[in-house]
Length: 285
Image (tube, rainbow, N blue to C red):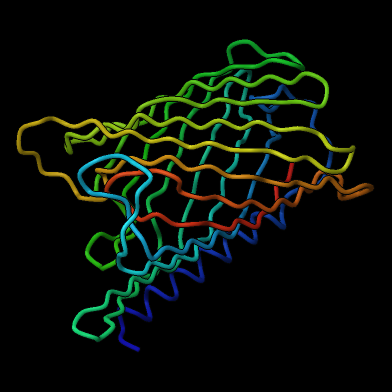
């Protein structure tokens, strides 16, 4: 193994260990907090392992559900998302990622495989609660995407450009049903590309212990018609649907919510058409 590969491997192990230590340090006490903005010193952290697989791609020229045989792409990603209450109606939210990616293409009867591992782009932001109640909440947020992922390796682990992302979030709950919506643009600094991003989550409480939910994630990229310098990973459109099952234990571990999710890319443009399995744990403290 080369010195560079060894360094990348060490960085990946360090990233994963840091996330595990953060999880183990969380206290399982109950937090009295609003739906979106946790009380000061409280919050939620969600470590998860995501596996993505694809051997087809959507058209590079138009948005649709038709796919074509393409290079094979595999990704094992360790992701940590969460929210930490800091004061009043303010909280810090984050989305940290790292992992290993593999891309295989076939040419003249031979397979050419490229691998990358290490940190991916990270996102951190400040969230401000507007209306907060037990059954309804909304907030606004300003996030910053830090390009810590590498773009020099194939497959790349980042977009190569910083971005800002102002979001509006809204959530409601009525009896056993709940729904959330997050919408906002991701604006790449100096890249000339803007992504309009929307996330929808609908759920139903099957029992006091189980929750079943559906998810929708949609991205549409807008960019100037004239020639611009942007990393190709910025320019894509995607519609992804998913289903998620979460479990709430009893006793001392009632704040630890394991979940399992399945996601499928059903339409897109300029991106692989793949499936993803997610295994995670939401810990409230």
